[in-house]
Amino acid sequence: MGGSLKIARIWGIELQIHWSFLLILVYGAFIYSGAARDPIVGALYGIAVILLLFLCVSLHEFGHALTAKYFHVNVPYITLLPIGGVAQLERMPRRPWHEFLIAIAGPAVNFVLALLLLPVAIFLTGVAMREGELRGATDIFGWVLRRMQQPGLGNLILYLTMTNVLLGVFNLLPAFPMDGGRVLRALMALTMPYVRATRIAVIVGRGMAVIFALLGIAQFNIFLLLIAFFVYVGGRGELEAVESRHVLKDIYARQALNQNARQIYTSERLDKAVELIMTTYQADFPVFDLSNNFVGVITRSRLVDALRSGTNDQRVSDIMIPAREVPVITPDTNLADVWDRMMEERSQVVAVKEAGRFLGLITLADISEVIQVMGAAQEGSGTAKAGIERFGEQAMQAPAQLPTQSPSQSPSQPQPPIQSEAPKEDVHHEEQKPG
Image 1 (cartoon, one colour):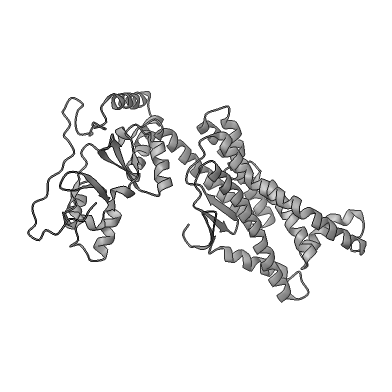
Image 2: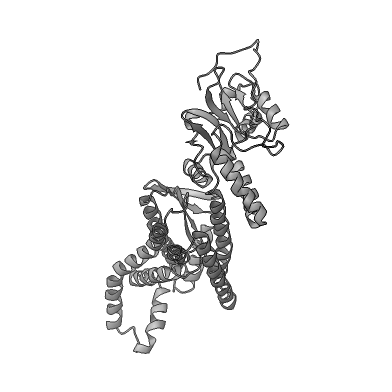
């Protein structure tokens, strides 16, 4: 996440703090400075309280992350924000039961922490009661609140105990995409399609977001307003991701291949790649050696970086991504799994191969285009849907080297092979680098 500072790496997961986290420290110092006899002591105590609170939030997120890793879902980082923490899963769990356990693990950590702290809190509270601090049984709640706002070890333990209980309960509210909403979605997905379960969870979550917003306005609570915004926007984004995956799971890599894709050779200079980008709609190119072996990929971003550094006299082989670093899939891999593979490998491109033979590239831009076109078609008329079904059937019957036909050509026309021209000999030809 932009503006985040890495503070630790634990169990292979980076723990980051967003710059806005400093605001909550200032808020804690301000609130507690007014509740203490000495404002400086109160401010320092407030900072300590907030830091320990977010230690509990971090443990909550590690509960999610470690459970996800157990189910082979990678979690590259956890980010702490003023309104809580976010564990970044690279993909959604494949089974509803897995999602249920991942979602419930966070609140479970808070309840365990509360149970561990409770005996200490009861002991210290009992000492205070014996000392006569409690005035009547009807004042228990107010007494607890006052104790939680005043500096002191016993007060701090009491605060952490109560806060962990509240964190666990609050996160279990069915406000998708919060933990409770994910639990709700996972349980519904056991008996209905995943997309429908997500839509219902999003509707419930939006209702909770409205309640949070109304409470935030009534109580002048900025944090409830921020959480309401997060729930509303986050739920919509999650629904779009689920619907996109639903579209992708029925489309295979062979259907997304560009039959007219251009390729480039290792010995060619960067100006050739610039020319291809400027004269075609293609942004990423497979790189071949002079023996027509696939040896790498040159992407638009790498080319732009090279041009910005003023090294446009380099050869393609100098800036390409080596083939060994490019994830490989088969033509029968559905695009939902291709997307997951890209996220796991942190790659914007994959190579499609069959029996060791290179067939083409699929990029994130290709998948995005498929989502837009196929998603719109599926929302359209029955004719469009039938066309997609026929398109899929034809692609599955066709050999792997014949991917999607170009829109400008009719099915009856013969399809040309991947266009490529062997480069002309350069009088300044240098020794070719191994791919």
